[in-house]
Length: 194
Image 1 (cartoon, rainbow, N blue to C red):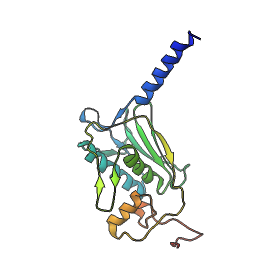
Image 2: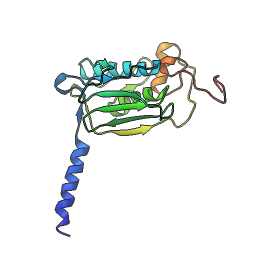
Image 3: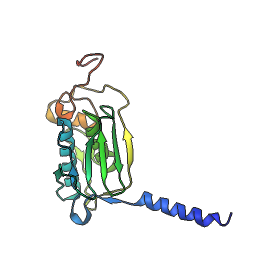
Image 4: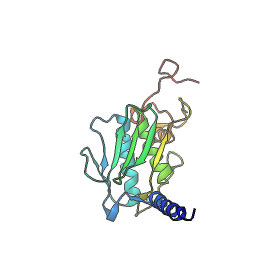
């Protein structure tokens, strides 16, 4: 039994080191590139824009997007046709990359919003009030998140204008605009239901 204790202590230290390791998003003030696919749909372009905007605001350095896959760490936005249309995942990789993936049309957008909100602490409190934490040493721990909305249809029609549509999408509501995934088919049609 006493021979096993050093082995167990070593194993715990390795596991704790793995869990505690942080991935810097802007090491030495040089932000990771945001890698996007060439054939993006409008909601995926919105995900890219939202991610770039909020990371830049948080870290105080400009994050840029590219379609060219760099060697080394990056933030990768990936549409995944094997996932449901609102299903998403956020994972870190061994090379220090962050991969946000999701189904079409809304999964990748929802994964981006979960990353910004649940991991980085951005809060959208109303269409005009938000909280964006200032984090010059922007870093995240190891991630393996996955989800999808609990209900297939989520909508309210009480928030007008583009700001209202963006606020609803950020809160994972179905929004008519293709920028946020467009309408969802319900009960065999595309009309809203009550």
